[in-house]
Image (cartoon, rainbow, N blue to C red; front, side, top):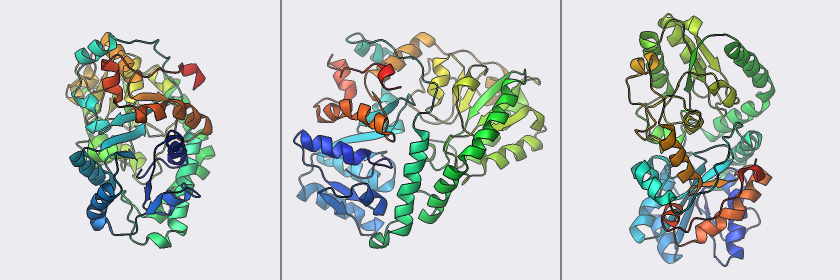
Length: 418
């Protein structure tokens, strides 16, 4: 195991794998990794420099006779290098990610996730062939984010240990563009400001919902998120925001409005709100542009005309509701049957609804393969997740091959995890 989601999930997963007979090692790169492995055996601290990691990783994979590599996300440099070496050696790679169908699921795939997922090269016709072997009832569309408060808490705790007690790991360099101290302050500020932001968000949301105007919704992402950095054509959120506003000003009917919804974990490191306001004023549409701080997406989607994003997983909720969608980055849901490729000004002017039969089959395919009920951050979510995912890690077949062979893992009803 390399780095996992903030919190105790990887430690609990290791315990479950050991109880099944596996030997599990954890390589930690900072005090936060070590803290959540506290009291557990087989912890290997990596104290070297980043440039020395390829050689050390190669030695570990060989001398420790590693058969499986488990990690959270496959794009941070230490993970990308380990995945490359594992593939060269025929080592099975297990990748966890946030759910493609959030919030009541997490993603488990082999080989890669997001833009590196097998889903990128799997068309709807192939999915339908696999589904013919197995089909369960489709859960209702989720309307809530899930364990957001626990997510923020564990993020702040993790970065506190990295900031305050990391002397042993002097060579550690974060994979994001800010220092550990800045990361901790951002997480802590986000946690402390939650009550104030909740009131501000409620007021802004009511203004949009009670405005009586048609509106289009832009789903913003975290600029430092791996999906945005690795699988996006934009170097910054500013480029994406300005593209959306330019297209809106040029193509949207003059009585339509544009609503930018920030990511629920947006912490202020990128000036998205100021960027939206400045660009809207420059284009003379400030009175028709709104900015919302995170919050629940379902109520906004109910009245939206269309949705625009780079490659946010939240776009899946828009598709489930039959809303026209324009995405600019690589995403597992970017299939021609239900995602538009129109220029943005033409998209705002007039856009077609997605093929809902195709999307329903695609969503069903995900629910029977890579989307596992549960979560990383709440104790209940972890319990639900561990009941199923351990058997999937130990299986000889990856989730997609298992469904194609008619051997997909049984799924718990969504109500038991909501």
